[in-house]
Length: 337
Image 1 (cartoon, rainbow, N blue to C red):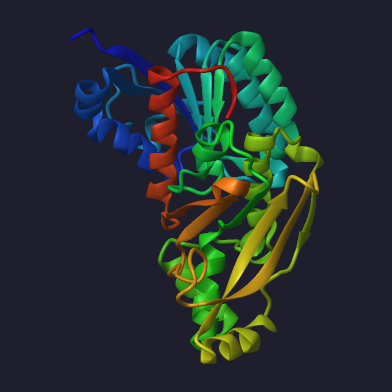
Image 2 (cartoon, rainbow, N blue to C red):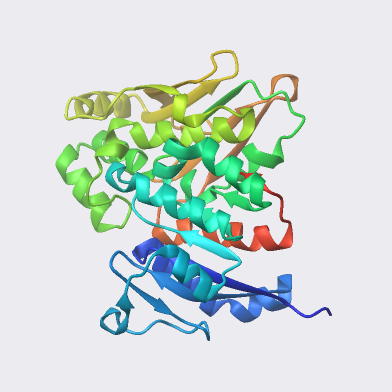
């Protein structure tokens, strides 16, 4: 057996997803070494105000022992990562910094794995061009549906297929809330339940407005059709208090409401998210349970190809990032995908 490939990782962010990512890399280090010939180690973590070097790849000390944050370029020079893994909140206020960090990582010769949507929406073309310029890869599975591997299918799994449409239930919070509304739970109580179970974030507004689902559909369309995701137009029907009565009526008919995003090759650059009714026995969207997701690629004469499952959770997003990290070493290809 050949010597394993050393895979030093710099982790940007240390919230729930990033913590699950780091814990998975540590716990499964020997498995990844044996199965894939890759030896991943998180050698540095950069938080909001502080950072820490971990040359041995062990668990970080308490944050009080971390040092003040330096410019990212300096930390990249110290840590020399092969991959920079980014898992910071996708707030618009942080989009510029997240994009700058991604571009800096690529220009310093690191691959980029990101679960952060905002820099992808604002800097898709710049990230792609910078990655190609430096022969590095950008992988975004964690931003397209947590554990659901729809991004991989959109990027590479359907090359040569005549994909005409992409449709998906891609927001776990929306699916869970709609199920609860159908059972007669109020919107506020449904949101609180989703938050208590780790499905919804503290601010679920992007989930309920359809903005998050629209972003994911834009990314999937960008990966497969090459759309400039930042230039997409979006129409989204929100989940509101008025949705509750409709969900109850639908439930009484033995059906469910789903927040479905869609994009079509015949209508380039346009993404629509709308509430749709499905029979509970109708795959793929009617049979989903709570925060489960599904994406269907309409492939013309080849028929529909669907990937489904994968509940929303920090672990699901973290595993998606781990998968991207390993893939960039096992089967590297430059560019954005």
